[in-house]
Image 1 (tube, rainbow, N blue to C red):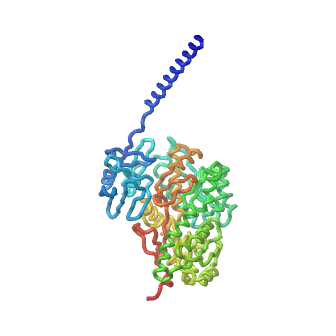
Image 2 (cartoon, one colour):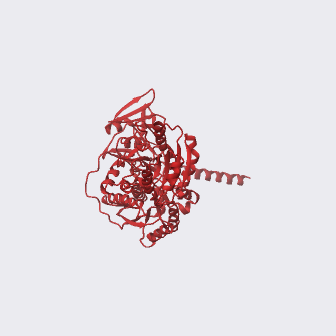
Image 3 (cartoon, one colour):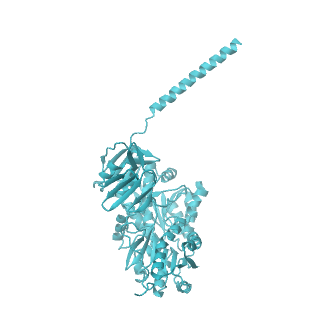
Length: 556
């Protein structure tokens, strides 16, 4: 018995010693691991002292607003009763409320990722929202726990020369159509800026971007698209792919890309199936991300939002209390969710569906459809058109003076050659677009103007802005990964938080861009007297009122 007791005592003593040693080791490790350092903020390279210091809340940097706003040339106000912060710079006014994620910019509601906080009598606001709202570029430098704000272009100087082999990026689209042509133009504009700055930093080596033109012919042939991508990988040795326009073709391209394990950023096809595949079979389709356009589900919602302005004009100027709406949608997969939603939603908006017409995307005559729309007594036409039939449809609509106002999406109508292509009959044509010449972000108008200067006053299509943003997002993911290895780049792509041409680009779990205020929305444009004008959303500088066609307006 004594022997057993002595053995138990020895074991307990040994257990206590081991426990104490482990506790000491863990404590030592905890003490040795440095706590995250303070977050530093610089403005045009100069450090900005903030008291109290910035805070990280939910992955977002919050700062005491007054010092930042005044450093960026703004006036500030604080209403302790309503707990509202007001920041004014020139004619621009921002209002943020402590504890609320809804702010206003120029009277327009926007959604914040993180609500302002009141800490120790000081108000903290999201730094990115505040800085970008006051016209600064905001960059988070994770390794240094620093935020760099820049209000002026960086001083010119010799850029570091690229040292490593080029990173080959395929730009894949229907290059004989405006969709592919603008995709290429947008990518070239981004490539030139990246390479002038020394290329992409991959670890300790800087590598230039080399673009490879991949003509998919996808508007005419799905098999051609798959074959073109296969050749781009096996013959042209591309490292990454950007592009795609037609949903059916992009699905085939996804399968080729997945087999060869290349990253593919979509910039032209809207159907939700493309990112649903990522959710349903992640290991196979994780290589696909979509930057533009928005998913067709969101495009449908935007069509209905923009339709409100058109319906209001019809009711106000024509006295039609319940407008009749014709739906003209090309025969293509991407339109199906929008057509189904329109038939379901329009009656609840106080409008009746006059009928649905489905011309071919490449039709050369739509007079039969237009005559039937006139006979159905439609007051409004919702277009859901990506193919070249869009030009034919508008030209014949104007020639026949069909008394129905246009709304919806007509990709041809986004382009600067549309006026000439319709023989000057594009007046009053309408389409939703990714960009208009309004400040959706600080980069929108500079890109818009530069594109038009370079390309004989052509207005950039959504594929141009999508390809431009895609190349910049890809560069950021590669630089954060420090490699072009596909799995590492995918992980960094998922962390994207990039200020693009049309808003803030952040991906959801399906690798689709987030939609809504604070992220990416859309605009609605109308051809008025030979110029493209933005009429929706209101609240931005540069928007104009929607106009009914002259032949519909009552004579005075």
